[in-house]
Length: 501
Image (cartoon, rainbow, N blue to C red; front, side):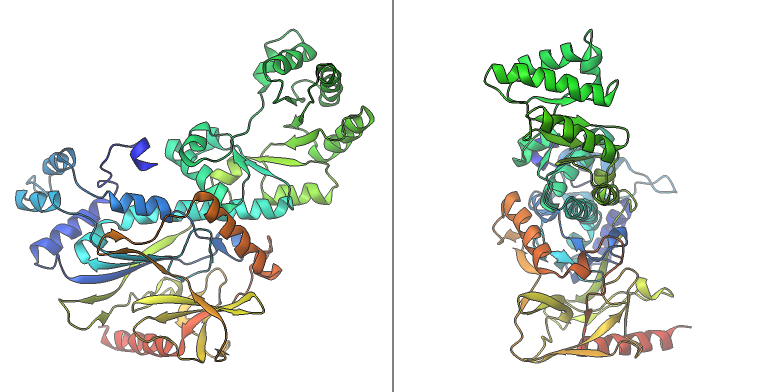
């Protein structure tokens, strides 16, 4: 996607402070210092019980092609500091000219259900490289994870009926529309209206006609007949330009004409009004007229909450077109993912754990080189343990639950005693979620197809309990620290607090 839409270099897709820090590392002789960063989020989006990891494949494409081209370097050479002097010296720009992605990267596969404070991405390598990519990784993973999660919630509300992503015209720019279409498909949307996304990703495309089509003709029946003549195999008529019920009757008239020619009307679309009541009346009209297979498609500012309400009202809608509230992550405009340094070392020396503290516990970080172990019981996930891969859990895995568990607002400090410990007995099946993607800058993870990532999301949603997937109440899925890591975190917090002036 990136090569198709943009020039080869996206190295400047970063915040300036990533480059000023990189310059500082270079000037200080620390460019090759080894570092570990983790990308995680602090709160479940949409006040829900989970998130769907997404964006890894696009992020990997960005990393693989990372390089500063001549135009990038020429631009950086024009930047000036507050004193009017060049911000970067020429030797540093020459260094950037030879910079390539040379780090290890481990990540949660796209389509995996994830929870607050669990690393979605882990980067290990020279600090100058791993620092420069921070903003771009956050940009890609935050947005696509947000939209994939929203899509999963909308699809769940539709209860097996197809959801079509219709958000191009309301998306945040060109890339927002394309990335949202991709993420929505991973989250479970059946198709998109975005033809460019369809070509780039192989997503099925769907669409009917607009009100402007109807308004171009003398009357509604004439508009429907003309559309059927032009699109005999795609006859879904938008019936609410003037009077919705009259529009349904007009669609039936044209459908009879189509049938005489050996074709069938696929259905009608409702885009305004009382969708529940109108869909019930439309269904009765269609059935009485002998068109029980004609589907009713609905659009009009839909999301998971609106769809759930329409279901409760007995709406006879079979296909849901969801646009603005899906592609913009309505109710939660950003995931809030962060990228934190958790360990450093010089050469082949020992790793030194690093921690960021905050008066807000939720903003503190977890030190170490982290992995997430998901335990399974009777085919269902029962708890995630964050551990340091240098100190993996034994056969029996004990964890101290994060304050708030997997819920929004969970703090990263170990439990204060109100939640206690949980132990997963020896022999409990598990999977470690972070898988190798790059080693030394070389791609080692085979790219799953978009359909495979979509299937993974569907499978993950199927095996998690309903308490995780409720729309209106956050779940309490157990997420915690392996007891040794929890102990080390508590010690580091105490040491750092004592060292404060």
